[in-house]
Image (cartoon, rainbow, N blue to C red; front, top):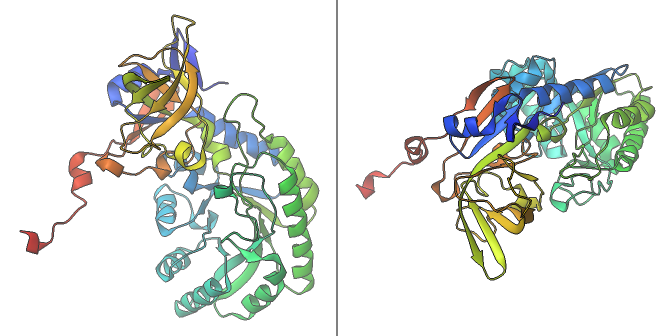
Length: 420
């Protein structure tokens, strides 16, 4: 089922028209379709049938508690990378024993909070982190269950800024040092070695990099078990790409799961998967209203009320988001135009050189495939408020994050007494 589609010439999210949302909630706004979230999660769960696997949604992709809860009630675990994300997961009702804590720079305070919560697994990224986690856990009289994030030095063939599995990356420990680090962890107080973690990058659109990394992890499991380590978990990370435009390559979930089954399925351990973008990207859109259209030499600029602070991916990653007018055009005439925002930066654009119908002031446009790394990476640059987020289910919708008020935004500041 297409969860964003035209009905009577108007783009809908499930059974709610986007022009209704714009009128009642205002623009810009993020809109997520519950059916798309549920369908994608269930498709991955079914693809993994027969595997001892747990899907742990990567909260960094979209941290709205409505989204988290949608997955949690279906049995998903969570992958978090900060105390804040851990607190979000717990607030959304996720049991601590379904939470994995990753991230290259955990603080002692974050470690202590997670140890006391009783989370399933820490993914440790360095010898220094191991030493600190050992001190924290032992000091609390608790045990932290760990996996090392092992860097397989595999080229994920993705954008340089979201490739994490190469040797020059800041993430993980070198494959060649893993055996020594596991031996050190086995002797550390307050530490229980239980698994291996890997993650090669984001928006990976080919299966071969995964095959290469999984094969190395399989070898490491065998070596570690032979050395006496009780390896019960293999966390294979996430990174599955999605098609951002028609014709883009994207791995089929069944093909990915079959690769996992083929390379890792006979090891007798629990497979942990950490999809983020793959579950939420297609489930969300950014809805914006046209403010003005203007020309400059041979260029047409269509200025909308959303900006790079709302959706930074095009500026940061050269990411592509398909643009759809909310009302189908009455004419077949199109022009090439840049869709840009009001922020005072030349890099403030959401789509460049798109052939679309001429868009007049007041018209609505939807930027598709915006459910991942959209709202989660938003800022208040230029003192622009964080925008509203809406979750749709059938004919209903709920505001799952209200638009920030100016009072709340400006009220975050404190003027020192000496300034009067």
